[in-house]
Amino acid sequence: MKKKIDKRVCPKCFEVRKLTEHHILPRRFYKFNKHVIYLCRKCHDNIEVIISKLESENNGRLDTDGYYKVIKDFIKNGMYASVMQDFEGNEKILINYRGGQDETTG
Image (cartoon, rainbow, N blue to C red; front, side, top):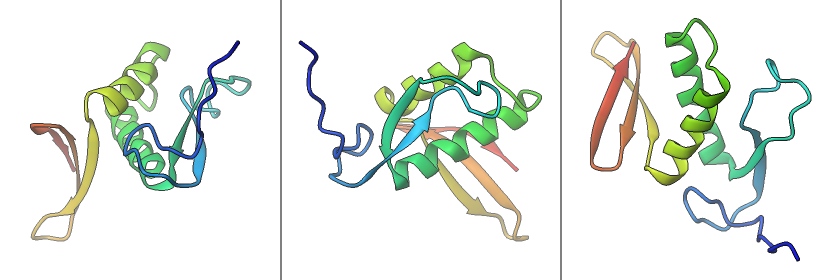
């Protein structure tokens, strides 16, 4: 018998919210995959920022292990993204982990 999961509790922030389906392997590269995780809109938007940043640093794409690592780091290791602006108005994306800042990009 399969364990029943309450799809209203976000596995990242533990808030009770309407959840959205996030494809672990992006559909633009892996059209027919069913590898998904359910996240609230806020967390879903945050993981998309992280993935976009990492893809831009890796020729526009991660390998399959890379996408799974992002999900693992996001859910289990406290990874999150912050978007800030510098004094000149340039947007900076910071990828942070619980306990301290890890990376910056412009």
